[in-house]
Amino acid sequence: MNVFLRNVNDLRASSRGIICSKHFFNYQASLGILYALAEPIKTVLYGVICVISILSCAPEEDFAVPPLIIEEPSINGTVIDLGAVLGTMYQEIEREGQQAKATFKNTDTYFIGYVVSSDKGGNFFKELILQNNTINPTAGIRLLIDNSPLYTSYEFGRKLYVKLDGLSVGLQNGVPTLGFLDGNTIAAIASFSVADVVHRSPEVHTITPLDTTIENFNDQLLNLYIRLYQLQFHKNMVLDQNVFTLAAEPNDVFDGERILEDCTTRRSTILSTSTFADFKGVTLPRSQGSFTGILTKNFVGDTYNLVLNDPNGLIFDIDDRCDPLVLSCPVGEEGSTIIFKEDFTAVKTKDLEKLGWLNQNLSGGKLDYEIGDFAENQYIQITGFRSKEPIYEVWLLSPEIDLTNSVDPILNFDVQAGYDNGNILEVFVTNDFEGDIKTATWVKLDTHLPRGPMNAFGDSLPAGPIGLSCAQGSIRIGFRYIGGDPKATTRYHIDNIIIKSR
Image 1 (tube, rainbow, N blue to C red):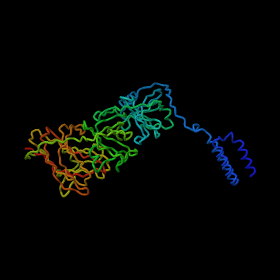
Image 2: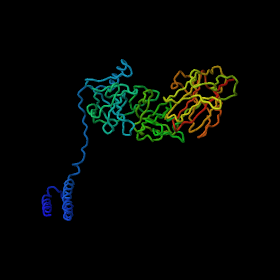
Image 3: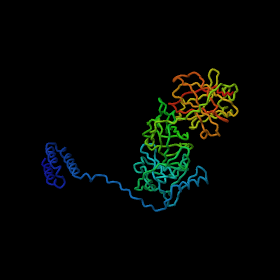
Image 4: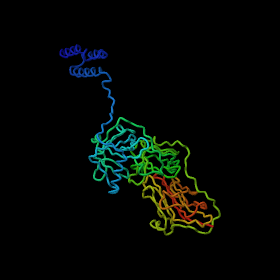
């Protein structure tokens, strides 16, 4: 005990040098507790109190993290435009084909890019989307980096210098992509190499979206930060009882794909959202508005897709929708001259094309129309039930029908709806089909499609008569089925299609 007291007294004598005055009385009180405790505990507490007292004397600012100062990097090489990088890639593709890659070696070249993506919301992963200008960009690229998150260092609008030596550029999923070459695949830059490749400027800029339209989509717009106006989600995605989320439906495996329509041109495109996005559960707006985000392509690289940085990229603040007007021709007395007839008797699915029908899933899935039969009656049928396709737009086009010499033609057909969870079948007509459904001018017909029960089949009911006297020349009838499993999967049987004229 005497040794302990002596140590304590020695500490008291030296405390003026190590204990600041504002804590001294707290320290004195602590010593009283020490006298009352056993020898081992006293020794431990003695050390703890000394450490606490010393640390508490330090000014708070001594432990504050100093602000990170980013200096303009010293670039020892030639700075080229990002457009030149893409030009080099396309030259190589021209020589060697679509799978070709351009590799940069000993060039001492850099390009400047501005970050227009953000992985903060989880909709991008281990990639940066860069474009060459903050306003009116002309070139964009996807840079793969094996690190996450990236927004903490490479935030939206940050100016970057990217060193090209050792990197390769090529089309991956149809999109210009930059990284290390692994076999013939563009791979991500390893995290330990990033500092040698990507150099941050202290400049963070405001990015002005490039205004465009779905009609003007082309590969030169890939990886650019764009804005589209006068859009709405297809009405079958926002039915009263079945409003889709961005990417939280049961069959959204990797991405949720939702149909966006241009109210001016009637063209449509796909908004793709990752199922790992923090905002995947946001429901689609029913109204009309704008999109701001990145133009890219789907996984197989054959369809343009839109991708959001966050939900703020959707500003749908116009209450009115722009669903198309219908072709409403006068319906007179039905004639006796049969211009076209199909009841699908003795027809097999594989024979549809031979008979002039076109059966196509524009969403790239396997769901299509097929021949069904019940009680010795055959019909054409479609249902998305258990298709596991989260989005589908499936068309059945009739053979060409010549109305040139017809008088007051009238269309009739029968429809049986069942397991109804939304009216997702529409009927259109066109007179300028040239082989591509997407480029034809489709006008919706004034059909009265029956609704069916939710848990059974309804009756087969007439969907006409539908006047076609407003249509001219050679036409095709198009049955469009739009929905997504499991929310919009109504089953339809279509039969007894006939057009008569006087």
